[in-house]
Image (cartoon, rainbow, N blue to C red; front, side, top):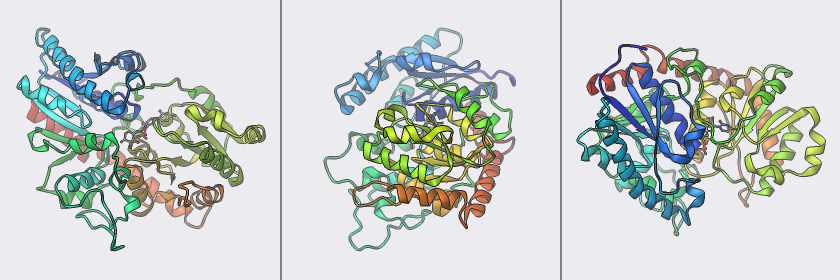
Length: 451
Ligand code: UDX
């Protein structure tokens, strides 16, 4: 631990796995630099989070038993979170003000913009943390600034052009932007992230400069995003920055020992790891196509099915034997870091994408919704670390398509180049977070200004 600095940063997270991981990691990174940091999170997630270096404190979203699943609708949940969350976050700030560790900054998840009002009320610093890529943030920013009509259409057939981004077709955009009404309640929430940008003292993004360099150059002067990622525990990037070596948060029980034992018996780069993150709900038809696509690829596979186990065809389960392992949840980083894993079939959630890049694992992108289609396009075309599937007219990835993509990444003509690119991005990620790297320096600058 470096010299303890005066002051105290509350890091506020939306209570979902893909948000807790990067925000908790950010709090740990601050703690490793001698700053008192506290993660504020919804009650029911407390028992799933662990840290030796960061305080963990509850706030309320109004549904303390089990959160979102208890609420009648997405909108009701978000409204409740805004009201009850503002009140309980204020109470937390007040509690610390009389404790000898007064809070002087709130870093909040961009999905919870009301936290900035709390920071203003107490006259302390407020900083937003985006859990999407800078490219995806910039697409939303263009919408909120009227540079793209909403809902976005592509009537002329010409690709959509935005500064710093490659030409994009409609299916490459975040899913909310091309869907006609009724719009997802998440859309208002996402666009709301950009409503009071200029009132923040800092804007953080979980990405790194080399990865989105062109975009950053073109955005310069428009809005000053500070890249501070990838927020992957530094031990996985061969660094010893964070006190804790794991994410330290798992909303489901991992089956890590079983996975590692199974992987130990496999040859290097011979296993496909497949997971669609914490939120995607995969249809039975799609699960079936994936199952037979994996079987046809003739490779070993480790599949995280979450709640979809009952959708797996019984003939498939009877046929897999030692070829495959099916689990409900695992420690994804431990699995991706294992030398036996040679391909990651992913929904391209931003954390999974960054984890695949940071650990140098070639990817097959199977995007589901939200920012994932855009991330998948970048994985294939900009960063060259994998391929993305084409869906049929029913929106399904067929077994033949999946098998073809797996072969391309693992044994095809381009597999060597894809692997080389993956290793190149791993090195870039290590540079960014390492001592003196861009992301590390950005965090240092923030702390210099804060204290
Ligand atoms: C969602 C969005 O998809 C994402 O793009 C957005 O930025 C955050 O919210 P999610 O769908 O859960 O998140 O995907 P992802 O962003 O990839 O996050 C999942 C996290 O869960 C990753 O950090 C991953 O390491 C972890 N995970 C996943 C596990 O620990 N075990 C598993 O078995 C699967």
